[in-house]
Every structure is written in C-alpha cells, then in structure tokens.
Image (cartoon, rainbow, N blue to C red; front, side, top):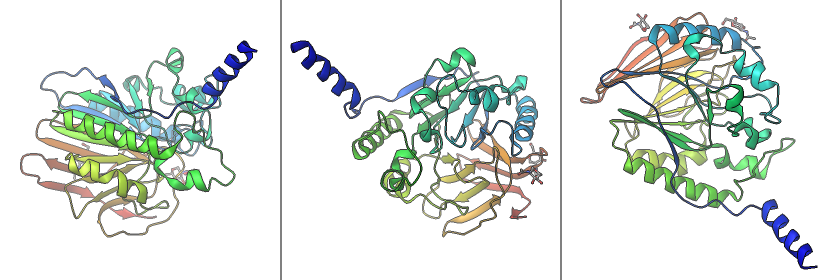
Length: 336
Ligand SMILES: *[C@@H]1O[C@H](CO)[C@@H](O)[C@H](O)[C@H]1NC(C)=O
Ligand SMILES: *[C@@H]1O[C@H](CO)[C@@H](O)[C@H](O)[C@H]1NC(C)=O
C-alpha cells in the first residue's frame, strides 16, 4: 500500500513537472580571435529534406561562409517542418540538416532556437544533446546566451508567447512539456533575459527568436512580443532583433528606438506574396528564398541578405560610435 502510494506520488510528479523557476540562463562561451571581426550566417524556416530550394540556399550559404570564413551559423527556428522531430532517431535530422548543410565552411557550431513547427513534434528530442552524437554542430536550446567577444547573443524561446497556440491550436498539437503553465514560464524567461542583458558587458547585443516583432509578411507583427519582450530589449539597448517565421527576408527599422528588426526566414518554402506595411520603416523586403550574413567589429555591424544565386540584395551597415546607418544596395523591395 505504502509502495503504491509512493509510486503514485512519483508518477504524478513526473506527469506534471513543477513550473519552471527563474534562474540563470544557460550560456555558451564561443571562442573568438582577439581583433578579428565576428562573422556568421543566419537562416530560418528550413528543414524540408532539401526541397523548396532548401538545397540551393544551403549551397550558396556554403560559398558565402567560405568567402567570409564564418565563426558560426544561427538558426531562427522552424528547423524541421512541418512537425519538428518525432524522436532523436527521426530520419529528418539527417535528411534536413546533416545531409543538406554539407559544405566544409558550414561545419561550425550551429546555435538554434525552436520555432512553432518544432513545438509540434517531440520538443525534448530536438533539445536532446544525444543529437550531437549524430552531428556535433547542433546546439539547440530553448533560451540561452552565446558570449562571442564583442557580441553577446540572446536566444529567446518565443513560441510560448503566442497565445493562440495555447487557446486555439486547431488540429495542431503543441508539446508544452517543461513549459506549461504559460504565464509563469514567460515571467521567468523575461526576468532571466533582463538579468542576463544587464550583466552583459559586450559592445553589441543581438537578440534572436523565431517569431517576428515587426513584419510586413504573412504573419505580420507578433503582438505578444511587442508587448512583453520588446520593452526588455529596448531597456537593455539591444541593437538587433533577428527572427524567422515569415518565409522571406526583411529589414525594418523602428521609429521609436535604435533597434533594427531583421527577418531571415528564407531557408526553404517562400513566395507567399503578401506585403502589408506597418508603421515602422520598411528598409527592405524580399519574398523569396535566401539567408543573411552578419559581420561585427568594435565599431561596425554589417548585414547582407543573399538570394539563392548568391546575389547580395541588401547591404546595411551601422556604426556604433555615431549611430550612422548606411543602406548601400537595396536593389528592391521585391514581391515578384
Ligand atoms: C526556387 O528558386 C527559383 C529562383 O528564385 C524560383 O524561381 C523557384 O520558384 C523556387 N522554387 C520554389 C519551390 O520555391
Ligand atoms: C554588397 O556586399 C557584397 C558582398 O560583400 C559586395 O560584393 C557588393 O559589392 C556590395 N554592394 C554594395 C553596393 O556595396
């Protein structure tokens, strides 16, 4: 009887995990060479077994990564479409990642956040360090910090913010294990982010999440992030917020703070053909596939969007010392 009660207690405990508590975010020290600019590529919304031009984007990424000699790659989420990974043995891990991003120049750490589609599979599998036995590049966590010399990157798990996934999931199932209840999770996450940002001594702060803050494409703005997360980024002087979710490339500058919004979500399926302006300043929009590069030194940040032919579509730079922003070649605000 006592044993049965104990078993039941253990079972109940593991079935409803305690709400997450606030604490320090996991942080990763990315080794950097003193005096050399930091260089990386950013891609989002990609895992489709090479289809929808995923392989062509990957091939161009390989070329640009080689020319730039990148330090690492960032993924803005929706790593495996449409339903995340089903287990650590899911073939999609090889078919959509290992066997697609094969260029030597891309054999660097990949720091990844989860997107809403990743939450439709077994999230714990995608977060499982066992995946690194298959491919050591894959560094996916919910929310974490990467310290890379003059830049600190803040990776933020944005899917739980979007209320409709909880209240109106329709046919889709979201794996909220270790997340629910939503309010406590978000409260702790915002507190931890704020703490980590306040502690940061890096010259540049870059935040990365899956969901848009400002976007002119299909999903538009994410109101929950504008309400809850943006104030934390503004208060802590975050320079860039980079996301995926919108299957396009876009750059929007805020009219009320220096923060720049970049969407790099062109990793595979694109061409949605939707452009709905909002009241911030649209610097660039491309409706097709591609990716983004970022180079940062003590004074300058430079971002370039590339299409699948390797053409630079939008060159942007910002000087930290005089906050001077330069857009050199914004060939198009294109819808095709
Ligand atoms: C692949 O890219 C080419 C060139 O941008 C485009 O014409 C074509 O529609 C794309 N295919 C898909 C499936 O998106
Ligand atoms: C944009 O950047 C690319 C890659 O560095 C370069 O080849 C191109 O000349 C740049 N374009 C402009 C107008 O600065």
